[in-house]
Image 1 (cartoon, rainbow, N blue to C red):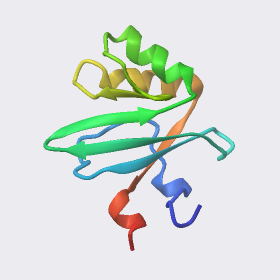
Image 2 (cartoon, rainbow, N blue to C red):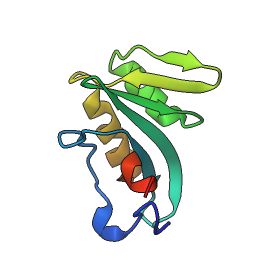
Image 3 (tube, helix red, strand yellow):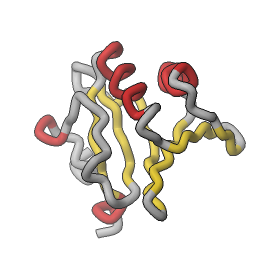
Length: 109
């Protein structure tokens, strides 16, 4: 977990993509520090796309916000917009989750 930077000082309780300028691995953690879900955030040409599978609470939150779901095999994905960004933070708050953003560039070192 050290390679991914999953330490207390890197955890965020709100999903804020304002400073993200490269693709990243997202690790969502419970209050006890255990990782409960991992997703991929693709940054390309000014757009952010959230890819994940097997975590229905996020799918439900996205769909309730009006986001359009894409599917590649068993992977769900959503283009992040101003309208649906809050849905992730709302679900994180409801489930008491934190998130750690690990830029892909960090993993390549």
